[in-house]
Image (cartoon, rainbow, N blue to C red; front, side, top):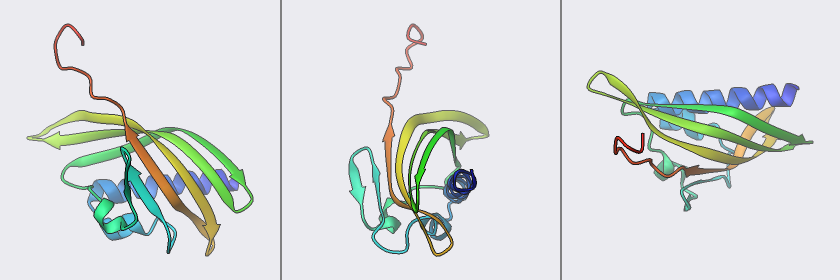
Length: 128
């Protein structure tokens, strides 16, 4: 239960850093060395290049599934991305995170984080 709570907190901290456009705080949620991030199959070993947060975007994660095995953990959750433009907030995308984590230096860190965005639905009124 303690590990689960700490991993949920790690996700919340990363979401806030993403939404705030704070790349350094976002990177600090990853393992000190050797971490990677992938988005829709594009793999980033340079986490600075992977960051695309801020700019009125708000990232929320929910429906967390966490499996802790000693100092390692697997995590899966739903990602919901909102964008604020011209005073309106709209749903921009949904997707799924698949994560691997490690407990080191007194806390949990992502060793790898893979995001797959869902296909974007048509805006045609008959589809909605």
